[in-house]
Amino acid sequence: MTLTLRHYIFLGLMTFILALPGRMSLPPLDRDEPRYMEASEQMLLSHNYVDVRFQDKPRYLQPAGIYWLESASTALAEDMFGPDVLRETWPYRIPSLIAASVAVPLTAWIGSTLFGGITGLLAASLLMVSTLFVAESRMATIDTVLLLDILTVQAALLRAFKDRENARPTPLKIALLYWLACGVGLMLKGPVVLIPALGTPLAFWLSARFTKERSTQPSLFKRMRPSWGWLLMLVVVLPWCIAINTLSHGQFFSLAVGHNFLGKVGHAQESHGLFPGYHLAVFAIAFWPGSLFAALALPAIWRHRALPEVRFLLSWILPHWLVFELIATKLPHYVLPTYPAIAILTAASLTLWQREKLSRIGVVLAGLYGAVWAAIGLAFCAAGTILLAHLEHKLSIRVLIGFSGAFPLMLLAIWFILKHERRQALFCVMGAAILTQAGLFLAVIPNLQTIRLAPRAAELFHTVQPCADSTLISTSYSEPSLVFLSGPNTQLLGPQPAARYLAEHKQCSLVLIDHKDEAAFRQALAPTGTDITEYGRITGLNYSNGHHLDLGLFAPR
Image 1 (cartoon, one colour):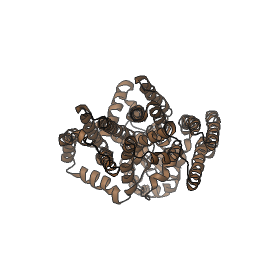
Image 2 (cartoon, one colour):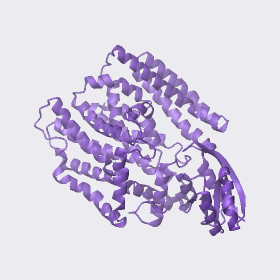
Image 3 (tube, rainbow, N blue to C red):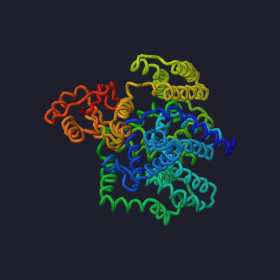
Image 4 (cartoon, rainbow, N blue to C red):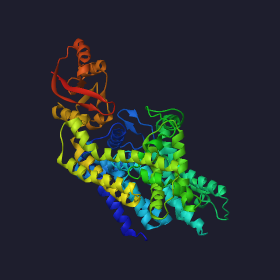
């Protein structure tokens, strides 16, 4: 089967449609997403497209590329719907939506080029429904856009690989695409893009040495014209680097490269330090429902490891995966750029290669992993119903409909696995995943009022604010989502500083304070002679730290 433009358009539209549920109703997800949103909004309002800031503090974690994209999409939405859209979440999520809708067809193209159309379609489907991809494609963060950029790099390398196999020169435009994609990647997340961009051709060259492959053809990297190509990469990133270095007096590079990038290598940041092997451990959840089929594909991949196509994909996966297993700071999305290659190898094992007979130990390990996979699937199917019942003490007809569709499909997938009918099991579990994800984003998360503290607090603040540009002072709840929804003037202060600020700015300020901090706040406020009136209370769970809060909104009398 040969994939045509219609197939790729269909895959893009399918990804777009499946990524829509919950995009507008999903609140900003603490803590990273609202930081991106708020910094992008401030960039748009200030017209300062060089210096990235969150409130009055510089946000020197990565270059400005993702903020430019989110500012551009939000500016377009503002032109169409008015300034109120700046406080909505969906405009900032448009770059991730578009990137996801292109990444899936591009995965299909790579898979089709290597192993045929059926393999490409199945690989794209595996990526499209995988848990981590679904989550990241709905958030206004950098990872889905970075995934698309790295896929572009790998697509250029794939073309060089095919040219090498067919003993033909690689066109200049492919080298231009490769170096431009590297430059864009540097503008998105700094040197991270160079790990797959340089690691893949290096690993492929080393694999050729180990397999004693003899070829007079230029290597993948030489086909990219490295003698001058790196200059094109610098043309993309250097103007902004010079501007931010001048504006920040060198502070950006000391923080972004020295602290954020290199600091993650040796030291865990923001409590994200975990053991080597962490990404392998969470793979069962992050790549679900494809994780079991990827594990079962390992014997076939090992048997076909000498195939140039397999070596290319392994050269894509292993350098990136090993680097992020070895650095101290670990988050699941760090290895997301390897998932398309894993999906392609998994699909090839299901469509092209004969099933390998497992040893006795292999059968035991596969059984244990299958049990974990099945437990994850059953838990996913029931998660919406359980969350609503536990947190909101209610059931939803829409949630039950999704559960009644997903749960039987999950059971049927387990039955097919036990009968060694993997492809039928995969189709069933992908259906269960789609129903479960749609139910979570459409019917569950919008109804979880207990954890929607920031939207409820911001709504109460905007309802009673005395001035058009009132300031919210929050002493007990300091999540970035509150800043995004309440405005950049929001002050996150302790009880004593909050009391002083309120006394000095009585006319247009309100204070949000938890019941446990109220006595300390009133005690600090007493010497100022300021009396306060309560305008409402909200209670709920701060899911970022697990704290239950009873927040009151107060204003001076």
